[in-house]
Amino acid sequence: MMDSLRIGTLVGGDSAVKVIPQIVSHGFESFSLTFWQTTGDTDLTETAKRVSELADKHNFVISTVGIFGNPLTNTGDNADTVASWERLIDHAHLFGTDIVSGFTGRLPGCSIDQSIPKYAEVFGELSKRAADRGLRIAFENCAMDGDWSSGDWNIAHNPTAWEMMFNAFPSDNMGLQWEPCHQMVALIDPIPQLRKWMDKVFHVHGKDATIAWDIVKEYGIHGPKPYVWHRTPGFGDTNWTDIISILRQAGYKGTIDIEGWHDPVYRDELEMTGQVHALNYLKNCRGGSFVPNPV
Image 1 (tube, rainbow, N blue to C red):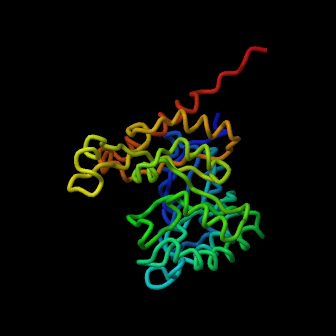
Image 2: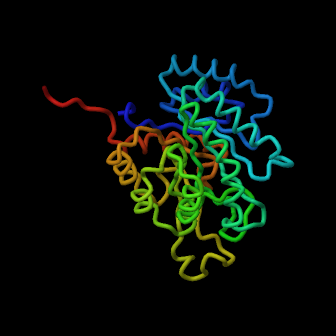
Image 3: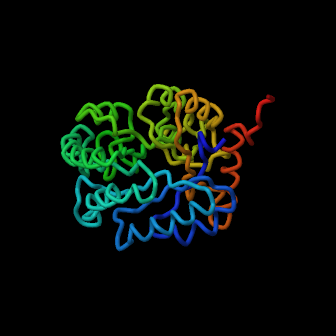
């Protein structure tokens, strides 16, 4: 079953060698390695070598390597973000993945429209660098508390923005790191969206949401009460059987990697309890264990 759609989790790129051996026995089939704003002093060649040794031993894959910062400013704490994109693009093959993921960035305090030209300038070059190496770039669909008018991190959180991004410089190797949670936070129905955008979905994050419709109806989305919570799959509102069916019907051969550390209940000492529940839940949504047909 995992040959066509593996279920895994996110791990910090700088701690992967330490963390993966502690959790791989739970049954994770893939790992998405992530860095925040910079790859820092991580030796990517050595990390790839040691992770590849673990992958051979435990039969998992590295689905993506990612850098999450603001490459459109490339100043302050984001001063190394573009260079980190370049490093990951140059080293991705050592990890056995063809996907580099992250945020698009945006011009702080500016609208998505105003950020598109800078996005095209920065990622026009990065997409060529990736294409020359046979790689794809996938943007997470997280608003990072931004909206259409303003924000600090990412423009790739709305389907109209996706149309603008992919029209800015058409390229087959530019796509999405999609998850239902971020769309549900915006009260977008993720299921028809996934069907429509399936050809641009390169990677899937396993993160869900719970919407308190009673609060939405009484207080709206700008009132004093929270109306939505990020959830680990298996605890939220999404029908993941439908999502996996859509992925498979479209011929998706990638992974679903759980993005933990957000659930308001299964957190702290219950973090891995929740993640392993999500792992087994998603495997069941995938169809459970493979059963051969009679000859």
